Length: 244
Ligand code: BJW
Image 1 (tube, helix red, strand yellow):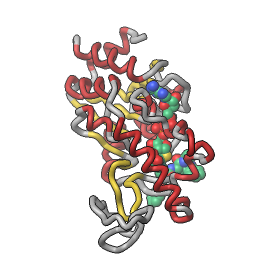
Image 2 (cartoon, rainbow, N blue to C red):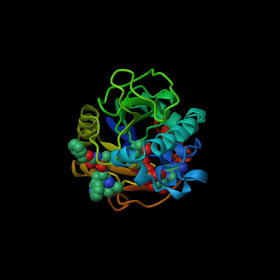
Image 3 (cartoon, rainbow, N blue to C red):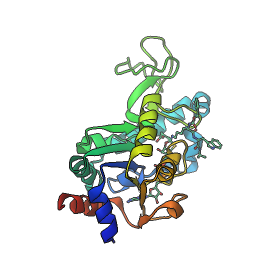
Image 4 (cartoon, rainbow, N blue to C red):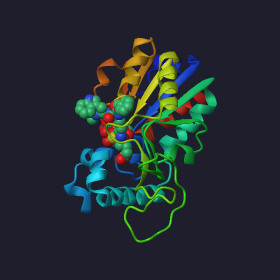
């Protein structure tokens, strides 16, 4: 599966970018974004819940959906894929980990520096002021309210139509334009602006490696397509780099 030229490219790389999506956490039991609708939630489309408009129209439904997903994340553990990226970070001169995931599993696995482009589901912010809120009074209301301004509280994630955190996004573009190898792992490459990062990297001359059981819009641009679960493939990459 890992060809000699891919192993050689990984070993000689000065800067590797790993960009992850929901697929890397699937093996931890966290459903991918588009598979997250089971049981009670199967009648909702995720694209119709993850918007500010949906929240304003039906804040309780959206809050309850995130509360359910937060519990899944709290119970999940990082898997072999997350751990392999920790090992990669230690064996490459420069390594940038970019994630669209909101589950925080990369940090829990031990990755030191993570650019979280879509926020973190375990954090809460005030919908009105955008400030992070760590404590609030429970008056039995759902969603609870901001203790400072009485605005509605919401998860600290980036919904459709909202801007991504500017500094993290800028760092992600800069790293993508300057890396030697770009690993696109477990993402459908369907949601902008994160979806344009591998194309920027490709245009700047990076080697593109896709790790995904299924094809994506990136597949045709990738020089190496490793079909299979991230939890199986990433440890092979990490081992190839560790043995150089
Ligand atoms: C495995 C595996 C295994 C399985 N191993 N792999 C046209 C109309 C309307 C809007 C737009 C439009 N064109 C573009 C837009 C903009 C929009 C967008 O891109 N929409 C597209 C859907 C078309 N983007 C935005 O709105 C962004 N903001 C923006 O553009 O702002 C502009 C602005 C600028 C300045 C001021 C104001 C505004 C924001 C996007 C935010 C996305 N947020 C979400 C929700 C986060 C919170 C939450 O989780 O609820 O982020 S959406 C959702 O998609 C989530 C994910 O991070 C993101 C990406 O999904 P991901 O990770 O790729 O997961 P899946 O489920 O799609 O795929 C899983 C993959 O894993 C699959 O490929 C599997 O095969 C694979 N897999 N098992 C490896 N074991």
